[in-house]
Amino acid sequence: MKGIINRRKILYWLYLFFIVFIGLEIFLQIFNPFHFRLKGDNILLPINQKTTIHNRINPRLDKTIINTRNSLGFRGPDTPGTFKNDLTIITVGGSTTECKFLNDSDTWSFYLGKFLEKDFQKVWVNNAGLDGHSTFGHQVLLQDHIVKIKPKMILFLIGINDIENDQPTFHDKLNNRKSFPDFKHYLYNNSEVVNLFVNAVRGWKAQRFNNTTHSLELPVQGNNLILADSIVESALKMQEKYLINYTKRIVQLIDTCRRYAIEPVFITQPNLYGEGIDSLTNANLATARLGGNINGSLMWQILQVYNMRTKEVCNRNSVNVIDLAQHMPKNSWYYYDKSHYTKEGSRKVAEIITFYLAGILQAKFPEYRLAH
Image 1: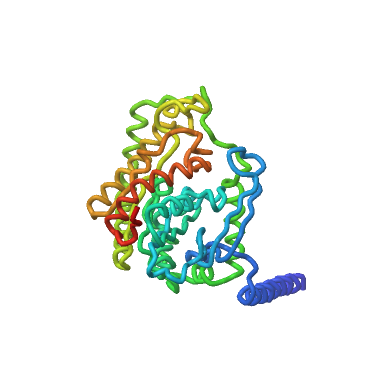
Image 2: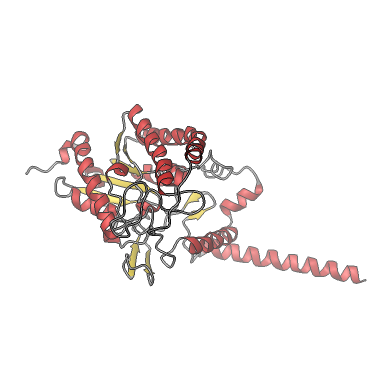
């Protein structure tokens, strides 16, 4: 008798679970108040959203940060009615392109648009950077969204998020809609309830590791790490197996752009660390300890391996590349951690890119050049 009662209880709770699950699923399918960036493995952009970030600890950033998304889900002005006739440019990258913790008018993409307007007419620049994205995500974003509006040019700032990023995982291969290898992944891509749970976990992790309430992560004078040559050589050699597929992903981005008559331009990834003495902290940017068995010099050498590969692939495919990594000063005045820019750094990035991009635009789109 006791066994029958227990089975009835289990069946009752299973019945209750499915009723609640189905009811919540129907509700969320009709009205979903949550705005997540990912649904399964497809990118859902935050359309017409305004986020206010309150910064209470990082003095290098504004106390109140406004992050606005337009009707495309990007940062920047909405699509003009004259879009097809304008000089339209979209910037693509990870967090160093999105500039999440900078106000809308302080991102390097915003500055870039303003600087270009001095020499070119009908300029429209939008920021499609997405925190954490690598070239895997850039390809999905390209296919899901950007090729549909066909800007004249895309700027890809890549490198840091592709370090030791191996070939696509099982989830990375689920780029095409309605392509589900099993029932679990069908639910993963289609169920609003499952999507709510997955994104809640993602959001919790993001809050732990990616917000302005954490330390500035600037170099500290005297906190040094000297590495043996053998350790450096081993770490650099390890990158070789990742570069093969990194190369393929860059080529894929180039091919996709050209298929839709979009001009790609790649930008190498800068970093605070590597060499010299930081003028603000007096820390040695080569020997500064970055955690674990890595210092500033090794971090920079590893990143440069990917930057060099970016340049090599672009040169082989006759694609323009702007070597921001070489021209961006190594000074914590421009960075609030090893990779992300302060307002001053963002403006400096835009100045460097503008200088080299102006020549590319003059050659590719001379009809937009202003007569001075």
